[in-house]
View (cartoon, rainbow, N blue to C red):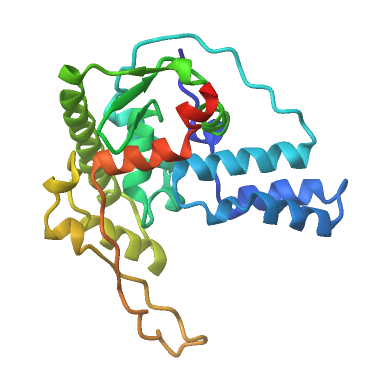
Length: 267
């Protein structure tokens, strides 16, 4: 099945949001639109699945559309081509900066697994039985958020370790190819340059927390210098922040906590 393009899937930039809001102004008051933004507040969501889900709910509210989820078919999970995954980080040849910031590892993992793997404190691994196919990322995030426990399969103990390793390897392959493509991309403004510089220091993905080293635990995020105005040059950059990087298991565990609880849905 044809994969949706980035534009069809999701392109959450200021221009896209501005167009949506300008169109909505003809039917809603500015105050009401501000209330919707405050209610869904996708900007505050740093993890991709939550960010996409909140933005989808906001768009449905703006358009006064009833949320109808698509019919799904079951299919075993298969990793997509690395090149196709890297393409999701670009729109019309330009990098999508929202995907490449401080939580870039979360976006890579989400695109690699398509949100079809989750875990818990005991390292139990579950796989979602339904395939995304051509469903856009906004709708897909909502499908996952409203998924049923019966659609998640507990992976056998003998198989889960190898799957953690496979996910790790695939994420590292995407990171490597992503960096190669960014090196061939013209990056002009200071903000984008700082993001690219930070990405070059990003440590490789590891399966479990005990596999992390000082590069993961002491990772620092450096900020771009801001212009003073006029031709006065730049201000001193803000102080770098320590930003520890989690393992694959830690990210899948946090993702599992965002998804509907098996226990709640079974009660």
